[in-house]
Structures are given as structure tokens and as C-alpha cells.
Amino acid sequence: MTGVLRTLGGPALQYDVEQFLYREAWLVDSRQYDEWLALFTVDALYWVPNGSADSDPKERGQLAYENLSGLEHRVYRLKLPGIGPQSPPPSYRHLVGNVIPAWTGDNELLVISSQVVSFARQGREAQYAGTWEHLLTQIDGRWRIRRKKVSLINNDQALWQLPVL
Amino acid sequence: MAIEMRLRTMDLVREDMVRRRIFADPAIFNAEMKRIFGRTWVCVGHESEIPEPGDFKTEDIDGRPIILTRHVDGKIYALLNSCRHRGATVCEIPYGKTNVFRCPYHGWTYLSNGELISVPYREEFGPDFDIASFGLGRLPRVATYGGFLFVSFGSDGPDLLEHLGHAAPWVDQFSGRAPERKVQATKPVKQRYVGNWKLQLDNFGDNYHPQFVHPAGFGPRRRRQEPNGAGAQSSGPASRPSDVGSRIQRSFARGHAMMTFSPPRSFGDPPKLAEYITALSERVGPDEARRLVATDLHVFIYPNLFIQTNMNHFRIVRPLAVDQSEVQTYACRLVGAPDEYNQANLELTAGWGSPAGFVQVDDLEALTRVQRGLRADVDQWVLFKMGRDERVNEDGDRESNSMTDLLSRGFYREWARLMSEPDRR
Image (cartoon, rainbow over all chains, first blue to last red; front, side, top):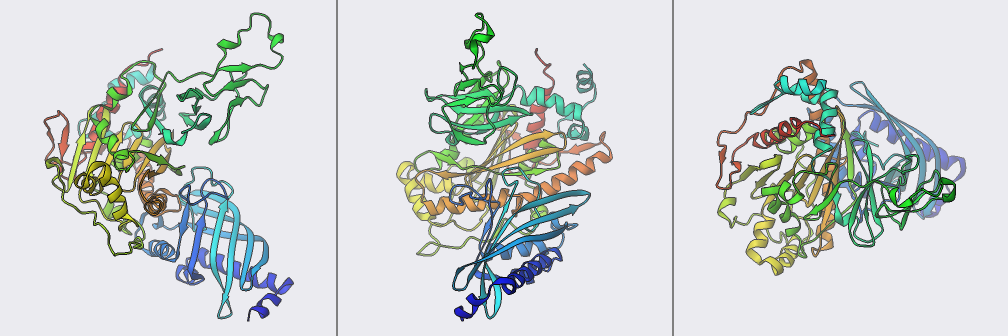
């Protein structure tokens, strides 16, 4: 199994991983949140650092730092009818680029990408850029996210309500 | 002055309603910055953020950059972050530790008490140039109470203790919940919103909105990590007569206020709750420990500090413009409580205050709508009419046990008092 995985490399791996990131971004942008949630492993961590990319969650509250049940609550909120920040919902689009995959274990692939998220709601527009880190693993032949860390370049500032990153 | 006339003649604040204009008029905002934030005591954080000599943090009040330092004499100094030579900021780092602040423009160098110690090519300034008279400006007043750090741009007026008045003992309860009677503030989570700063105060003091604004509740349920199940339940009986009842709200002089929920709204028990209560009991006894833990105390120090004991955090509101504000949420560790307990509160508090979180985003959305909506007719009124049982208690403070706008009415009495005192120059 693992040997097979690690033979994946070069253009084939690059293509596979890019397709995965595009699909993840599309699930978020098109509000298919349950399908998005299904991409995460049961032991997943979703992390948006506060203050700097190397912000220590033991020392400081993070913009997001949650396990799968936290993510489930996030999705529950996103789908709840009438909840303030989602009524009307914002629109956003992720643009994925500079994708660099690197094997970090037998079935563990670290993918670093640069992403830009354009946000629009009620006439207010914003752009968020940063470094996305996905720690991927394959389960039943499909990529799953074990850890997702989104380090915004302006995470030291007071930000308005953020889109799903 | 035009604003003087308007404040006097416009009938802006009545006992149970205020004119919408005070949230939308830039001239009134500018007057607030002079007469409220430029004069009264303003909270800028917690002294545990700068515990050691050389520690500093930078802040900004009404666009005026300041540095808060702990000098080698152990004292805290509030300095104007502006070189006395050409005016450049001498520090652009939010937090740090240093012996000196060196202006990047021409190298003027200051100690952490603001004293100027080095001017390159000093002889070129001539023999009469007195380096001792060009230290960094200092804010007229800086003081702490209960660990909270306050500054004032006004050189006169009541000292901090007098300013806090009847609110002071309630501020003490924040660190009073820590087994070692000390809290350690962590660096804040910050969030910005399109709305006037006073809207956030009204939202803090409003018990009417949660079921409408927070239909998803207050966050994911905590995972229980107590080895023996629930640990101590945070619902022990109140031990003081004044705490009987589900809710107490009091409005004090100078706009301060307190409010308690007992038993507290449950967010699920944090891990190691029983161990925390045991540690607190060693100092205050088991009955008082249970009473403290069973009470969710909110304290409001006008104009910009909100303390909430249930998750051991405080928030600071920063006005940026008439329709732009920032809320800083500071999770605090209770010194002597188990790490797991403190860590769970840190994470939950961040989730509340984060722009990617699950509570304050709801409130700030409501405030954004208020800001947009009240412009429909700024001569109309915002209503603070709730409260059927308001009374004056034996301490002379207004008190209520029902759903009430008591707190906001107190905020606007203080607002009117401060705003009607003419500028002193």
C-alpha cells in the first residue's frame, strides 16, 4: 500500500493534489459544506493562526483551532437558516496556486499552496491571502485532510468577519 | 464652537432613549474622542502583559500611538510613541522587550521611562540644547486596578479608585477567582466591525438579544475530560442573599455596571473543573469557591472595558471612526488553576471573539445592521425602555433583576455628563 503511494510523484502527484485542492475550494465556494466536511479525517485539525504563522495555540487564542466536532459546529452554523452573518450569505472564491507537495511520511503528504480568497457581501469587498498547509493522507484510495492550517498574511490585524478559508 | 451648540440644543440623551444621531455623526464622534477618550480613564489592557522590566506593548487611542512599558524601577509608564525630534514613531512592534527605543529616522534613543539618553551629533544642536527636556511625552496619568491597566489623557479628575467607585469590588472578583489571586492575560483575538463603538457597549449590557442573535448557541459542546465524569457541577446554591435569583444588574456612578447570571449559562464543564475548585477552596474555602464558580459575573467599566468571569476573559472596545470599531478579546489564565482548565477556556474564548468564530460575529453583524439602519432617520430615537423593576438599592445604585436596559441607561447618563463638560485647553 504505502510503497505504492510513495511511488506517486512528479507530474502525476502534482496533478492529483492540485485537483484535490481545486475541488476542496469549489466545495466551499459553492456552499457544499457537508461534502467539504467529509474531506476531513476523524482526527482532523483545522487551524487559522492569530498574530503570526507560528502563533502558539498554547500561548494565544487562535482565529480558529478546532477538531472535527468544532468543524461540524462550524458547518451547522453555516447551514442554519436566518443566522445573522449568513443572511444573506457572503460570496467568496478561492484561487489556488503555487502548489508544492512533499511526502512527510509513508501515507502523509504535506501540500503547501498560496491562496487568495475574494469576499463580497452587501457591497463590502475584501481579499484574504496567505499560505495554506494541508496534511493529506489517503483513506480508501482518496485524499483526506488530517490537518489544515491557513496563515493569512494580515493575521496580526483586526479583521472583519472572515469567510470559510 | 459648533459642536458645543449642537450638544446643548439637540436634546440627544433622555432617560430612556438616545438620539440615533450620536452613533452616526462624525462631529459627535470627534467630540467623544476629546471629551471621553481624551479625558476619562481608558483601559488599555492588563499589567500581566508586561510583567518584567523592559516589557512593553504598543497601543493606539483615537489614532494617538502610545507605548506602555515596564521600566527597571518596576513602574509602568504610558509614553507617547513619537520621537521628540521630527515625530516618527519609535516603536512599531505590538509586544516586546527592550532596554531602549531608538528612533529609526535619526537615531534618538530613549529609555523605557521615556528619558532621552542619546542624540547622534548632539554638538551640532548647539550648547543650549538640553537633552533632558526632550524625553518622550508621557500620558498625564497611568494606573492599575485589579491588574487592569488604565491611562488618562486628562491631567485632572478623579483618581482611578474614585473613578471605579462601587464597581471596584466587582473588578476584584476577576482575579479573585484565581487560586493564587492572579490572572495572566494572553495576547488578544481582535475583530473589527462596521459600527459605532457604543453599539458594542449596549450589546454587552443587553440580555434581550441572545435567543435571536445566537440561534446556534455559544459554540461546540466541550469534550468532557474529567476522569470520574462530571466533576463538580457549576450550579451550587448562591450563598449571599444578594445573589439569590437568576440575574442581578446594577448601574453605578460614572457609567460602570455589573450583571450576574447564577447559575451561569452552561457551555459545558471545562476539563479539571473539580481540581480548579479544590485549588481555589484552599484559599477562599469551599463555599466561597463554589459561589464564585457558580456565578457568571459581567463587569463594565465605562467607556471601554468589559469583564466576563465565566470564561475568564475581558474585552476592550476601540473606536476607530464613527462607524468603525474594534473589539479585542483577552483570554486570561487563572494562576494556580490546572493547565487543561485554562487551555479549554483560552480556546473557547478565542472562538467567541474571533472573526472566524461562532459568537461575536453574530453580535457584530447585528451592530452592522443597526449602524446601517439608523441612518434611515438620525433624528429618530434608539430605545432603552426595558426594565419593570428598577429600584435604588441601599448603596444608592440602580438595580434590577429582570430583563432590562438599566445598563445602557447608565452608559448614556455618563456619556451626557462627560460630553457636556466643555473642553479645557
